Length: 230
Image 1 (cartoon, rainbow, N blue to C red):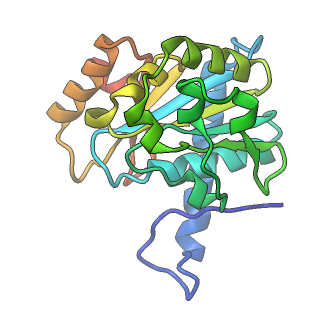
Image 2: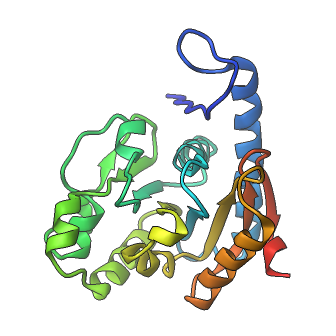
């Protein structure tokens, strides 16, 4: 099944999906997928983890990651896992039309094993781990060993693991998760975030031990490896 998840567009039909700009955006996401694969091609002995965050809310990274996950599965990258780690504003369960109260949070606090928090989507070879119950996150202690063990488990079973993170200022427990990634991308709205603010945000992540590979200018969908690190 070819599930196409479109990004926002000013020109939309009655369904809310832009035909002209939607096709163009999917082509850009496809280019991003193969750029990511090129950077990770020498690390094929285990599944690769790619995380994405942003400087501010509203940059569309959840939709972008959903498109990326679908295209990766359709292009036979291998089994793909979408992990929704955006505890403050989870959306992957809505994008993929999945209703559950079990997910990432439940694994991190030790309530369930990883396999009980992962569910198939309508796209072949694409599974989702929803965020889970946010009330558990605030009422129980997150165990770092559970987080590390979960991603070790996922690497053995999936070729690509995509992590949807909250914005940088709201990472909190997400920082623990971001450190598990082989590469992290920062989405920047070029018409909204100054270069100085973007540089400071990226440098903060690097200092916190996150492997930042580059930025994505969300209004133009341009992947700029290490641009903000110089």
